[in-house]
Image (cartoon, rainbow, N blue to C red):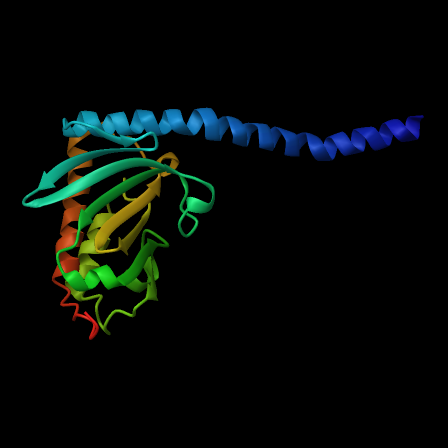
Length: 208
C-alpha cells in the first residue's frame, strides 16, 4: 500500500504544477488580461481625451491626429487561428495608412532584439511576399525607427500590413498609459516612422 501511495504522490507532484499552470492560464485569459487591457486602454483614452469607437465586441479604437496624419490606437483581441505570426491575445495596436501605394504590396516587419547597440544589432528585419527594393531601409528611416523604439511604451513589432503601418504589442507588456505627454509622444514618434516609410522612395512593382 505504501508503494501505491508513493506512486500516487509522485503523480501529484508531476501533475499538480501542470494543473495549477492550466488554471492560472485560464484565469489570466478570461479575467486578468481583459481587465488589464481595459484599464490600459482607458489610460490611453484619458491621455488623449478623444472618443472611443467600439467597432465590435473585440475591437475598440481611438483616432488622434498628428499634423495631417491620423493615428489610430486599437485595443483588440485576436485568438486561436486568427492570430498572426504568433501575435495573439489582447493587443495594443497603433496604425496609420501609408501614402505610397507600393507599400500595399510589401510585407515588412521590424522587431527590436535589444535596447543598445547599432541599428543592425538592435533590430531584426523580416520580409515576406513581394520583395522590397534594395536599400529601402534608408538612414532617415532607420533613425525614425530607432527614435520610436527609444520610447518606453514601444515594446512590440513594427510592420506594414496592406498599406498600413502598425505597431503591435501585447497589453501585458505595455507600461503605464496614463501620462498624456508620454502617450502623445509615442503617437508622434510613430507618425514620424510613417513619414520616413513614405519618404523611403519605394519604387512601384512593375505589375502595379
